[in-house]
Amino acid sequence: MANQKTIHGDDLLYRFFQDALANSPDLFAAVPQLLIATMALWLPLDAYERWPVLLPWVVRDSKCRGNSRKGIPDEWSSPDQKGFLRDDNTLVKALPRALTVRGPKGSYVNGARMGGE
Image (cartoon, rainbow, N blue to C red):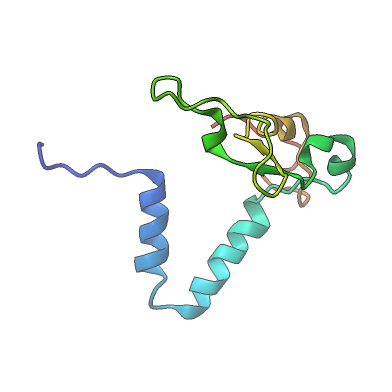
């Protein structure tokens, strides 16, 4: 038991794409496209008008929150060198969860809402 492997979901997907599909170029190209077409969730374009925090002058920067134990100051919402507002994703990560997903009729995701992790 001490040498037992631990498997995570990302390991399984990696192995699936790396091993199972490596010898089949047609499947290797088709499967990721199918995954995106059937499971990807995209924000409607009008969401950018209704939620201005999603505008392109906000960039994700996980280091902007600092670390009090290490003496690194919190710089959340301050501009970077190019003038973009820095956010650690706290402003926007929950906003899409308020939207109902619209997908292909009969799709598993159609009519659902996004959950947490």
